[in-house]
Length: 616
Ligand code: F6R
Image (cartoon, rainbow, N blue to C red; front, side, top):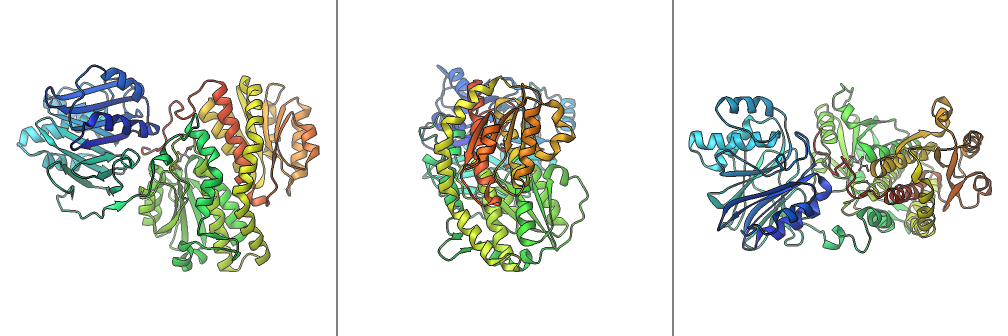
């Protein structure tokens, strides 16, 4: 939800900021803007509706010099995506320019107060209120910028990662964070700002992740960044070394990040399991389960909180944890959980699942559960993000940066971590038969190879199938047991990037309503592998065919029966039933991808979406 970048140093800021915006464009892409302090023209602000490429065109031929600047790519919250509402916003005096990711909840009250004092507003945004407020405090009380920012932030309710520059002080950027992510990069005589580290890693691997209420004072004449909180107390931050390389955040020959990330899954799951699954010793070792053994094995109940795709992973986690650990599990939408009045106590373990580690609802659910005394376990991908920092322990999924807006490798990474967690806790509790445990360890270890085999065998076929089904305006996805959440995930992928309406259902629920939708136009994707519920799934396929529905089936390699019944089929390599989601998800990701491509959609930047949902 909006990406912010900043630079101050010896180099020209413009190319660094534009490149940084492109790396952050996955966070929002409805408008973009840049503010530079140039020697010749002073504060220059260029902004436009559209993408970063449109901003570049807009800035062509203009003065883009200067060694200090801030830039923004927007996902609109307040006010339509127009060039007026795009960031940076400039205060009425023309001195201050601000970029902001988040929401100022009390902006309307503050705006009325400022209007009464004669301040004129030019946009519909909450962000303009923030810059006007800071500048009003600065001029009225003749204060320096840092003090004005601190006083203003005391009056603000909401979430922000923001950076501000003063045309009369081209040596300083002030940045602050509350509930939205912000990273400072520390180079040699130069400093960088980013919503995450991706715009920074090309220049330095030394970073500081800001905490809530932190303010960074970045001065080009000082060796280090000064950190204070909004009460003006000095904060000491450890400089962290990050382990990201450029190839991880570039497309590497693929036409889209989404396709790259789908194909990365065999390698990313190996990374996820590295040092954790040891097939020679027949063992799964998670340091969190060693360090917090007592809390985890004595849990009275697990409550999984997550949103979207991560919530689907949670539904699979519930089945794994209940089957192997014999502990009851509830799976909650974080957005509902945070406003409910959940009955939680200190024997509950809350598992928060989030790729970005920044989802506002999931973070709020964690804070609520913490207040109520639960033990919190995080399953996240983005290292150093807010959710892992708010939890007592957890497991990173370690699948590398996920940039395509539709989540792919993070989902299989989350399911892999949930599988390892279930196995480790079940073994510690003695609730799993040791032979079954060893079979599962081996099965899990074999998944990356099977994914590779599957990707090779199904990619072209799915591309062909997708051409047949671009006509469809609706899709139904069905699955049972462990594959029911896979059906939900397949439907979500399709609607997100192709804008085709799709519903996922447990297959047996079809006859309780959705069957009314089936006619010769309706494609039904069914995950019908040979598992415990195979006969029931066969009956569901018969019911669909009897109503002339068009069946795309995911089948076990040796299953001639379903192949004969289905209009189209994709073969899945054999694996243990509870590991099937790690395979069955892949063809559904590809199907969504190719249908969207056939329809000419922008798969990496689908309309209205953003990768990291840092607002409610
Ligand atoms: C779907 C998707 C979203 C996210 C959801 C939660 O492809 O990406 O549904 O899964 O916004 O995001 P995280 O996992 O970052 O908390």
